[in-house]
Image 1 (cartoon, helix red, strand yellow):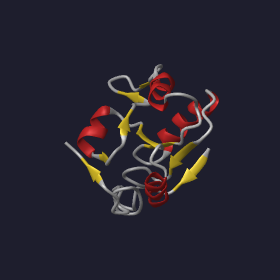
Image 2 (image 1 turned 135 degrees about the horizontal axis):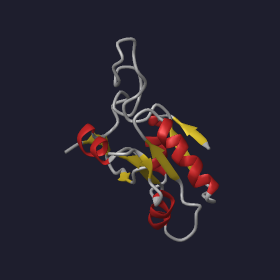
Image 3 (image 1 turned 135 degrees about the vertical axis):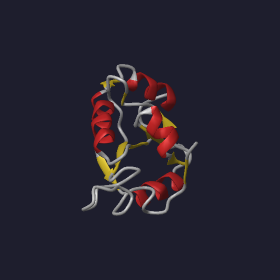
Length: 130
């Protein structure tokens, strides 16, 4: 799977309008923490049990449309869930899967806070929340 920084992901999305940015976090994270503008929400796992969504690959396949070669960029909080979700897509035959490194909120700093070292929001990229 290809790794891409948030800034590179944003530039890629601008240059490739057919690419999809999929936010794989929980619905609560997507809505209330915020998400990149234009991101489509498909949970990899969600509460209350945090089990893997058995329909994840099928839901993404519906979004992609005809064929599995449309570029897909996946983002989560820190880049871990999106990497696991991306591997599931690759295993299912998707050809162009990118993981957004550091995710939406980025890595933890020395005080265990996010959004201060890296990530989509830290890089000042467009985002929104409810």
